[in-house]
Length: 187
Length: 189
Image 1: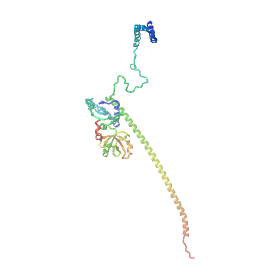
Image 2: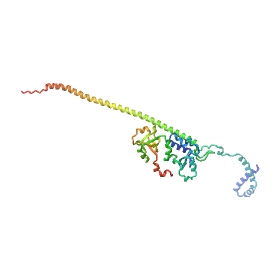
Image 3: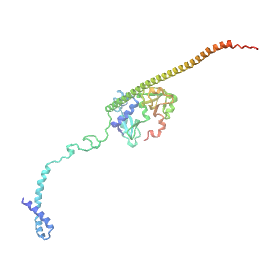
Image 4: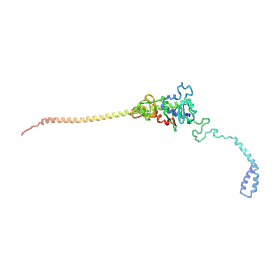
């Protein structure tokens, strides 16, 4: 404990010595003492702290396998240990067959769905066509009806007119026939 | 030259499955009588973004040729584009045609227009597979069953029946006329 105190005092002295020039002699004497005293003290202090630190092994995150927080690791940057670098080739028959089976199943599904869609569309189109045809027929029938009605009207009118004329004309004629005989008289 | 990776195999097979039925399996696993030897197994190999279909024996032999010197091995099926899609070549026609799911036979008067790169109009169709959906890959054949190319249906068979004679029924994708038209770029990169 005693030596440490001396060190502190010496340091203080050194600091203080720099300012006042009159105390230079004293400081020199103190400085001359320093080299003898401090090195062993420092050596003592360092080894005392050192081994305690060295005993604790500091593990890095990688060694412990701790996942990094708040980090986005792009795909392919961090490869798991013990895995092959680069491309993974598919060259054995079995894996190729499995890939083919998956692809084929997908295609079958797609074709099936396409067929279903086209059938549904076809049904909808057929229904629409039927509706359109029905409407056309309705329109035609309506038109025919109106035409017929018009024809009837036209027919009736002339009939009536003719009938009226005939009815009127006949008596007239009859009258006329009777009256219509021209008589010539000479007075 | 290298084998295909998993995603590459998937895109290749999905492209082939557009035109072929489930019998595509025969491409990978040939009939049991011939598959007794390991060397006769057929494999897919990629070289300069082109995919080749050849026997393992030939693929192994080809490793003795330096990559820049190797022009072609076996049958070229097509090539991978830079966007990762697969484009079929006319050379794949002979491999696809026997396993075709849907077929379109064209009349003799429609052969030349097709071989010059035209689409197939209804008037040129001799007969076609029934129940074919829209935008489905088909193999185009002559009336005597000689494969002429590959196409995609423009309409389903039901709709095609109502189409006028000049309406397009099949869009051309590949035809054997490319052997002449694409002569310069078909085998050289």
